[in-house]
Length: 212
Image (cartoon, rainbow, N blue to C red):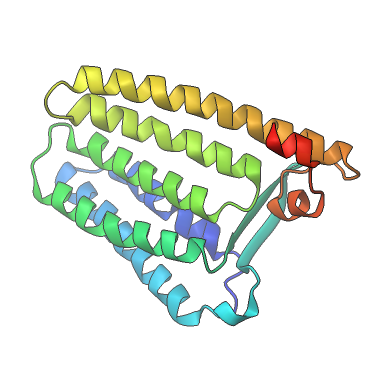
């Protein structure tokens, strides 16, 4: 039985738990976030059991209009490649949040919120089947990691945070420019403006454009 709408739920489950935990006592909120990561892991295990890799098509697809004027769709899906990246994310976040919950972190509710936001962003980036949605989640990913490094990092965390911002900001701008160019050029190549990966695959760019 396909999970048609549940990818959105599993992506935002950690963020929802992190937001609620921010208003609860730290001793309660941290375990709520841990519970959310366990819920994500349980869902991913169910996907691994249910997944049919022989079909060669996307599974558990969510495909809705988001910003139709810009050709952006809320399109999520799982295939044989990103399934294991999603599973690895879900698996690694459990011990990471559990270890954080067992420690007495300074401003622990805020710390757990950023951990939850980071998991949501990483899962969203791996599930995205629209290039614009991928860029949004990729950029969102930078926010919690910036605060986690700058607020709770050890050693020379100021210098580490500065380097992180410089490298990721430049990379993010280049990725954004590349995504916009890909969508616009594909539209000029006989299609309509769309950032859905399936549409971009159907309108192959010229060899010269790809090399550029």
